[in-house]
Image (cartoon, rainbow, N blue to C red; front, side, top):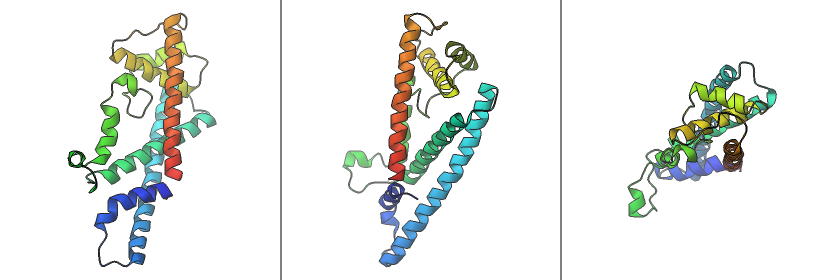
Length: 205
């Protein structure tokens, strides 16, 4: 797999290596485990992609464009990589952490909790956002008719987060409220793209 994934494997598996193993045996075990996890990421990414593609077709009413499919595939791989890290760190205790941090042994759960504990308006653009109601998909398509599907779906998630937090939702693409939400949409998508680019860079470094 990648150098970054190998580093995660070494960190979590160091205490599991048999003391009688030679350096070559230790290296072989870590290399095989990294390859196994890499293969699982590839399979999971393909499963997520098929699911996300089917969902997109249902929402859009037609087949996504090649550019949209490429975006869906990249997002699916990012999700699969984060899920793999969650599983890898589940139950792992860092022997060098302070006692207070030792109580939080499941680092994988901490990764998920970092997002799920945030209010909807702080995670609407992330994979941990709630699914929007069907009427909000329709509203997003009406308010952003000239934008691509990825933007429209992101807009539906933003509208859902605003509804959840009892914030006003525009009913037309005119006026200061829509302008404010449109800017928030662009800013949120840009921030999420930066987060995913960082994750992708970390996974390929």
